[in-house]
Length: 622
Image (cartoon, rainbow, N blue to C red):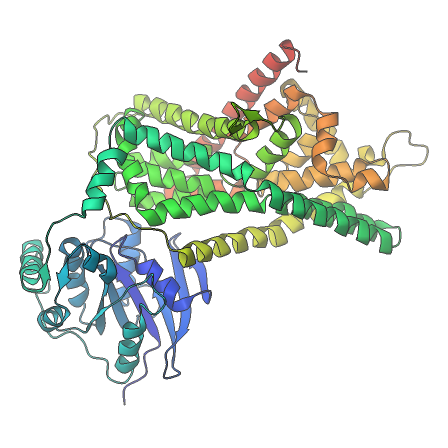
């Protein structure tokens, strides 16, 4: 008796619409994690067929071939073969191919077929193929391949209905492919190419190899002058939007946080518990959650650029510039991912095949301004930079934020250039990159991506940031001031003593003891700095009313402009993220590289902050 199918694996080339199909089938019923032992993202979800059967769906990393050139491809190959430790082999493999690019994608489908496992070929983006006049004979493909072939449109609500029905039928009678190209157990590349050409001639009629709209857009977007100008404008508008669009939502969150603090303070009796809840938890977590709208707006733009097919073109545009700095165009996407978080950015360098370029990208990825820095930037810019229009249309605070991001990018290129001068191998490696067709980002995929990232951010707030906030409150509260003490009680606490001791090192860069205290828990996560400052100043307040007010006016009154500028510059470089350093160790398998990264980042942070503070003081901003 045949066992019902339980696990289904989605495989395919990058940009085939595989993840969109996964989102369509599973919706929000999915979880994201890493494969055991490696930092390769895995997505697993659940869906129910009309028959009532439940299936586990696994979205495997994109691969061009089972002759793995990267860790992503190796994971996909081993899991499909059933060789991956701790992961059972899939019962059915669904190979997703792009109907508009079968010349490339069918070759990988032939490799999947050679595994000899039950398989379905999902010909995706059939709507786009029809618009371009491409005719795909699905019956011919099914006959020649010897596997079930089904059309899908992952961006339509019922675009996977035929696929689900087919999988439901395979639950009763799964069967392996019948044809084989292998000779002596080995697949010959020439045979694969020849078979791909044969299938294309039999089953595909294509009026032209590329879409007319793609060619028209690429004439401008890949132009060496207009293309770079367009990219600069896109990035500039993103940082303007981060401020302009998020302000109303941030004001609402800030108001709710303040009201919650007042309510808790009114109904709770005086004592340590009230201080913990009001000054520690509410002030600390509220100071971080308020920046969630800005982070989501930044993520929305990054996701939209990914979905549209523009990112590979940006990599192509920047290849010459990045090659001059010792990187390659392939470094662009990992570095752009690092704007969200350096951890996945460093992990995505696995797509860079050259070890030298990969290491250089890993070491400069922390210089990209990750979303965890955004709360710190937003706090300081909001407190010290007036909110006014420049030339009638540009937001001055957005201009400063754009300048900070630009400083990180320029610094990364300079560091990579220095590394290039020091290394022995100075050979260049040409960029080979697939440029997918342009497509309009689908709202469902964007919303699922934003939901996933919001959940990750809130999990950090509810986990590591909450834990660090409570720990900091304990250090700031105990021991209490001795009898006869004349100074504030916080000066006698453990944290107060540590902060005052650290000022001997950080006084030249303008940091007071409150900032020094916040830097310590900030090593767990950079955004903890904001909640730490909120907790420190809440406990330092002279009365309850000032304890629950927003942090921004407190620091604008208590800090000099020189100190604020110094701290802004510090966060361009500071290696204050243990997770990033741990990821560097995991990806390079070298403590030496971790030491190099932490050392040069701390050195650049201190030197740049020192110069910024001292120059600002000389100009009268101290």
